[in-house]
Length: 146
Ligand SMILES: [Zn+2]
Image (cartoon, rainbow, N blue to C red; front, top):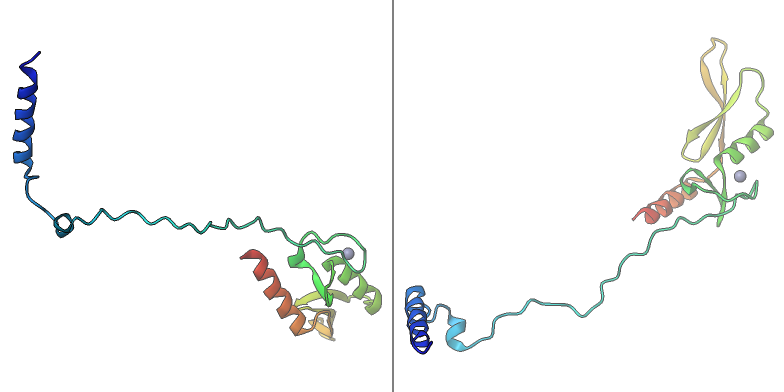
């Protein structure tokens, strides 16, 4: 038992020389600068809360609008279902035979009919949203998706 200790020390010395640990390998070691620590910010990281789409109520039917992206802006903080708007336009325009109401895009519907040659033409444009409202709506929806 007693002769084991010196044997171990000898081995250690041997290893040290082998690995070349006796000298300084960096300037920081010479100056006694402590090892740089990993920086941990104390500022809590905000976890983004789940984005919930607002569920406004349709001004025409009073039902909740599930998909705001397909709804129309009918005024300030006023929304309506696509179908409800379409229905309302149908009632007011009363398309005749061979005529129909179609959505043209950009907040505008059209009364679609045919000319003398049978070509499909837009008889009348029916804007639902002003361009500004359409733009505001698109921007609004974009913020929901961010
Ligand atoms: Zn509705």
